[in-house]
Length: 64
Image (cartoon, rainbow, N blue to C red; front, side, top):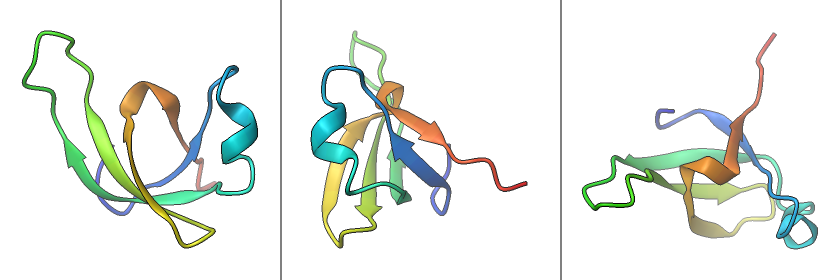
């Protein structure tokens, strides 16, 4: 995942709150430096909001 990538948030548990926000653009991507080993990204969402999300909740949108 890189800055500029188009992504959707996906989680079976947290899904409801993000349906209106998808898709989003990766603004910043940060490799993990802690023991959990989960990368994170700052996302600019379609609704105009910004959030930091763990990468395992982000799915890159195919640009076919």
